Length: 121
Image (cartoon, rainbow, N blue to C red; front, side, top):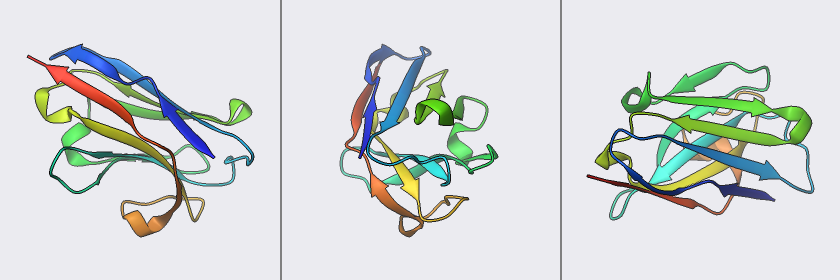
């Protein structure tokens, strides 16, 4: 079971760090990802990390967000800097079906409950 936390209200230009922990299953052998869903929009890929720590990002977050994983603690992170209004969304962590993860929803088979991130002007 995945659980994401760390969301909140932040001003534009600010930073937040999201965390995701896993219980009942180690996720060290899987790719992991962060996704988000804004009101009235479809869920979209944000960032992913492979089993071996390779990272990849959606174009709209490159240079601002950093995904990382700490396998010994079964924890996934998303450091978000330079937040803007368009980053307001519910953020979800997910465990991939493979060691890579991926950029498509079908690449993931386990999803955590979301954590709300709200960026204000």
